[in-house]
Length: 84
Image 1 (cartoon, rainbow, N blue to C red):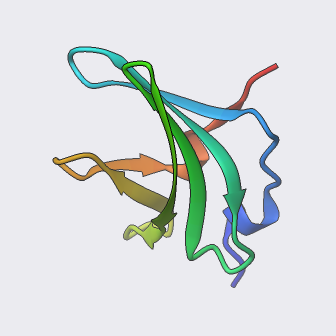
Image 2: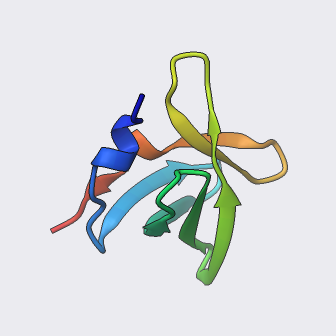
């Protein structure tokens, strides 16, 4: 069965913002590989930009996510929205 993320095309400005209690962290999807096993994500955190490859996991409902930070916060790909 195909995952709905593999059918969805992410625009160049697919973005998600998270507030960590101190500052906003912005995630931008650069690319999701064809098998949906990893995602290339640009992260802007306190003025610093880093681009990393994050392994993707599935939760019990089949939603794809990657983990971020020391607390391994789950960031779900279907929470990203296209920014105009």
